[in-house]
Length: 294
Image 1 (cartoon, rainbow, N blue to C red):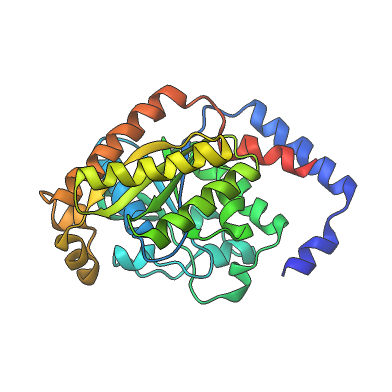
Image 2 (image 1 turned 45 degrees about the vertical axis):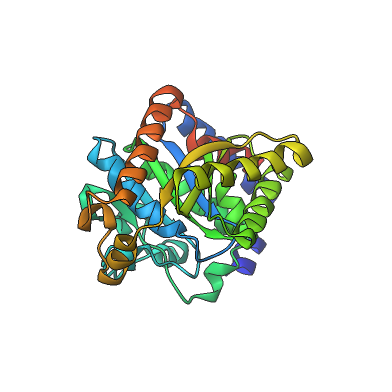
């Protein structure tokens, strides 16, 4: 698929495409505030964070779209027990648009399911990746916040999608291996010239003090070695109700709304709502993707 698309692209086609994109941008209204949720390694609760954060935001009256961009290894649908017949794979195949594969999820969120076990999705070409990003314009003009559940690690897919967001939220745990990989993600975003805000979310902390110390350790390393500022998105306490909810395929903010984990994620949602109100100014994916076609 990548080779077929690549051979079709010529300089003249790129210029013409960019002109059409710019014309649409000039008439577009303010775009959604976009948050890419990623992590240095798997197993730190990245997708669970994305799902439950999206539902919390919707409960606060925010129009939310959750997009599963963990290409080839998507699982957000499982966490919400949402079987799907169409996914991002169909969008890339050209048989459906993002709007057509979008579903209504728990709490009224809009959800674009990814696909799992498809090798082509795990190795997208730059053109295919930017094609997905440009289609997000269909969603963000009718949303306040778009949450991107990106993959783990520093592959081109993960970094490419994260670079298009207003904020990159790097999920980690207090474990040394998770911290090391989270730093690698931050370092890569910095090296690629990420123009947005990088934040850290500490998951599975045993106390508020441990979460804060974890963040300060990570942000201190980024400051000392990269001269790069990393903000604190918040934390979530280790909570057995989270594991129970995952096994039951029900988001924990719905299954256990009074749990410590739910209170923690609600606090993170409050912070994002404030940022959304202060920073939503007509940027978003569509404007950022235009420059990539010239």
